[in-house]
Amino acid sequence: MKQVMVNGFPMAYRDEGSGKPLVLVHAFPLTSLMWNPQVEELKRDYRVIAPDVRGFGESAAGAPRDRFSSVEEYAADLAAFLEQIGLGQEKVVLVGLSMGGYIAFDFYRRYAHMLRGLVLCDTRSEADSDEARQNRFKLIESVRQGGMDAVADASLPKLLSPENYGTRPDLVAELSRLIRYNDPYGTIAAAGALANRPDSTALLGTIKVKTLVMCGKDDQITPADGARKMAQAIPDWQLSIIPHAGHLSNLENPEFFNQALHTFLKDLK
Image 1 (cartoon, rainbow, N blue to C red):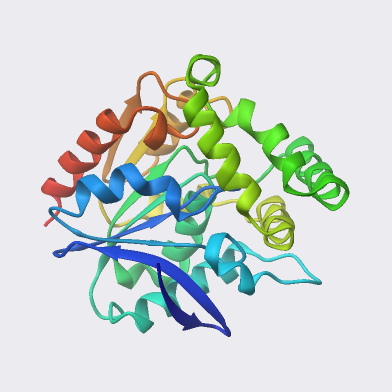
Image 2: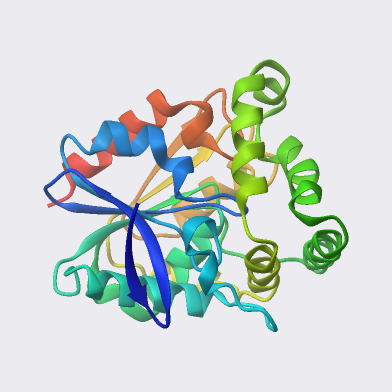
């Protein structure tokens, strides 16, 4: 992977293909490697850029040691990163899944001028409920006590559809490896950021770029009904519900996911 200095830490990223730039922002608690099926497919037609968010993967050096991060910080990192790699003046299509979607909302709030399109995957506009916030703080404590093994054990059954969790041991093993590779400090900082993120529901009606909302049909974390309502609140929206997929729809059904993304991207001017 390549690296570039961003806001005081080396941000690692993949940058493959050529053409209109497409930026992929990964989910919690994974890394940019979760986008492998999309990078391999889309690099034939686009410049595909997939960074490791501050504190994750090979960007672990950016993990705060004594505080939580924020979605605002992640969005600022992303804006500075695009400037550093020469895309500050060229509009990009931003694709965010789960945590990547939360970052995308804040990025649009602050840097809409840098976007030509938005893809929101398996995410939601609402802030965490009180129960969800408490669960994130419980996860933080489990990381402090049990490291990344505790995160993998708690997360994997929810990240995949019940069908895929039960029948695709290779996918479960690969996701477990990605989660356990991550830095505990970065994971704690991100869990705090997600717990404290702002509500972005009021932002939906102000989005002026074409937006594709994607969601796994069997997503247990951000259900498809919520994705449909979110899409309908955006002025220029498209919706794709991914069959045979849960929260990580891009990995669970990459062929369907990639085709939906291709169709959306071809329609963009």
